[in-house]
Length: 208
Image (cartoon, rainbow, N blue to C red; front, side, top):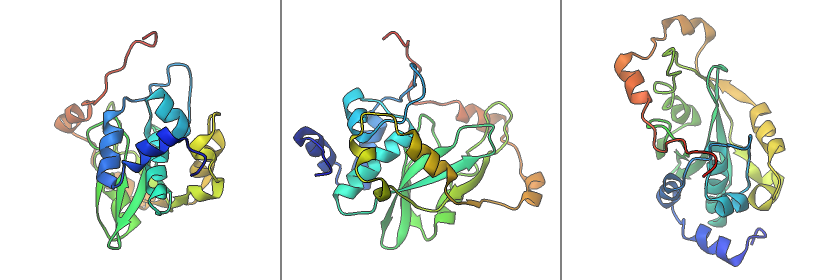
């Protein structure tokens, strides 16, 4: 199925619910990209046992796809002063949720309680800030991005998936707030920035 090996299928089929998928993502170390930028397929993630947010979204989408759900992603775009974030989308009883690989305490899993994608996207707004300046950086979110259009490439390719990353980045995005409201947005305070420095995986020596 999808060109996956028997062992790969066994691993992914065990991830039978969004919560099980999220637990699997949480247990896998962050991909620090010590040797340069990567956009690994699901096969490479399972082989190298590390992932960053987009790679985690690929794996989550693949597990959902195996269960007959659409492999949908949502891109959360910033103002450029911080990294964008990508999550895998799922729906239960007509409500959206998200599966998220992150090293931070806030941009994480979302339960399926959101009626619209906008509701889901704005749930990330308050804690999505630049930890140096305190500025809240989330400005837009993409419509559901269906990986099905790329066949099985994102699942089994050995090369980095720069073309898919660029397609997600170039897809239609919707604004979080009107530009004229930016002046009313409060920066994160001292306590919030302290909490924002919490990380799950410490950076390791690239030689290890």
